[in-house]
Length: 459
Image 1 (tube, rainbow, N blue to C red):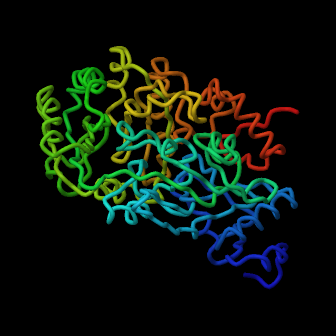
Image 2 (image 1 turned 30 degrees about the vertical axis):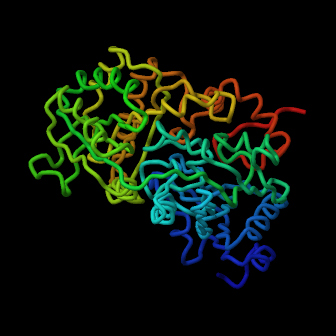
Image 3 (image 1 turned 90 degrees about the vertical axis):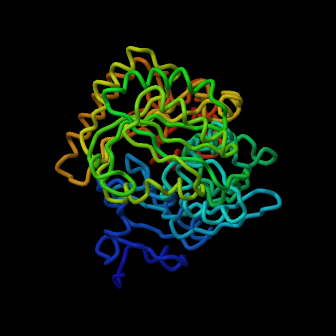
């Protein structure tokens, strides 16, 4: 660090490093998962402990700085960074404590889900997370969180038991059903609007070996297979999870060489029931159309969770759009057939099931509102080459525009770019007014506004 800095006072109060423009590690510290984002913070506090978080929050508030909070850095629109302001970087806080008897895990906010799987799997336990092991725990959880275990065990927030939070005034508080219950309600889907979470306590479930993997069909079979999928999924046991996808077969094992680079549609299975029942659950997918390739079998749960990690490393260009989906009418399926031929090898469309256990929680029980949706859809234009950024946006937006009229009218908050206040309001629906009131209580001046922002209610 340079000898003279405008931030000497905060530097002296921190255990972790303070990083500024001109420092050797500045560009590395501001790099995030989505390389389409190029923001230049005024300073980055890489917190070493909770005391550093409190110091950074107080400093940012007192200096009138825009504050962004970074955990895993996977946020699509780059809201983990802010131009010219302060980034509170939690990536160094990666402690995990598993209590196998209580079936809980206390997780710090710099962890990614691969860290959690590593810590819980030796005990034959897991909690609900996403589908990529490098995704940050904090961002996914605060947005709601859905993944391979959701049909059986609900959303990530349905398995959140408590959280410790640094508020806008610098206080550290505990939030649970029994303490600051209104804050706890808001944290479960309300994003990073209410403070900096420094600890998450999750419920764990007995998950060890799963029967999982892909089944791919020709794009010529998309309409037939998607119609079958829409009718089959609601009646499938909740131990059976299958996301529908349009994607490109990567040039890696175990995929046969003659299929490398071919655009396809298909399913990604994760079955947590008995092995014989799980293998039998795949049979209808073989009968609806002849698979080009399948690779479904028993595997440790962390192997499934990390399967996409090497295919989607940090540093790719990303642009995504999302929607909640209740039904898949033939008209919507026809539009998926129009756009499902993805434009680059990394681009994709996924329909993530959020029925089953997710739907047994009331729409007002947590901030996450869309409990009556069947799927959470994401359309992602992804590529290595920055020159393709505009074409990625164009494809994702056109695809989304074509299918959006058939959606539920809102999106999973973690699948949104910076799309404006109306889109945020739609995401929370009837819960939005309550969220604004809680925001006014815990962050009345909207200090935490670099997010999918919920403005505090007027007093």
